[in-house]
Length: 401
Image (cartoon, rainbow, N blue to C red; front, side, top):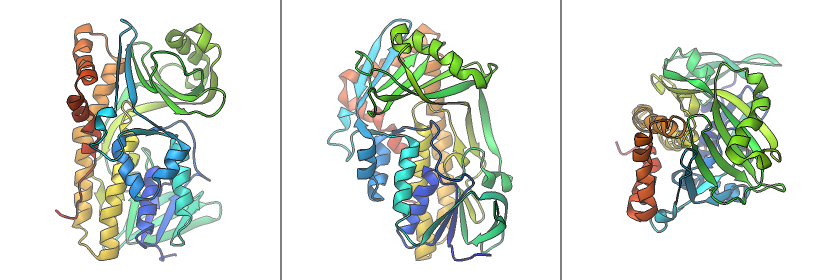
């Protein structure tokens, strides 16, 4: 049994690694446990809203992330049925916030940047290839049973953070509910390379259509053509193993046959979408964060946004409890505040975004929904107010409560 760690973080995605880094910077002894043999790089989140960048800056990660990715300000809604294009940008935030732009960067690339920084701290270790198989706890800490190629081991720590994804073994071991629903459709996230100098296509485009709806966002500028994320929906009854056979048909309908024939597929990931939240984000000595706590459809890029804000809040609250001896009721405040932010704000907004992009069959309703974006192109004050929404997903300091 090993007890040198003060905190165990389960899950080496961006949320878990950020939490470990922020705690390590305060001198906390942290062990990160990850069942995979190394970082994963399947098509996942790629857009980091302006409101999350202050936190990356505080942790000393922003410059490296900006260098690896790119900054952007433009958006567009493109309506297939009418041909209307509604374009707007983040320029109204200039002079109001420190980072008036979004960052585009693959989630795997961000995880690598965080891990590189984590590895500079001798008070952090990462156990790759270790799967959580059991959790028990008492008043002073929690015991985690881990399985690896070397056999079974047990870690004990006063505090545990479960940041191990929507299928969280931590949440499952604690038998916490994961309330909500699973969408009937299958989402497909594809990384593709194709010419990106075409008129009318912003670096983040929402292609509005009931059948061919898609979220199209540029990831980086490597290679002859830029790398883009093309995310669309299909009937979940179709075989997932033949998804690559159907992709060219979708691309041809959206971009035209000439472009579709020259698309290079870099990676593809079909998956089911959820709108779910754990019944609580704290169970004794164990805290949940990221997708282990909540899962949402990707429309609007609010999933990892919430995970980053969870990490920022945990870094402050758990760090204060461990390092400064602050009463652990601050962690109950964390759990309550982060759950409310997801249930009351993030999940409803992601659901509304999905309805607009993929379920826009009612012309009157679509016209009403688009009107706010049309106004944003003409009214900078309104645009700034609307774009400030993602900042409301961040919890103010919980230590003052």
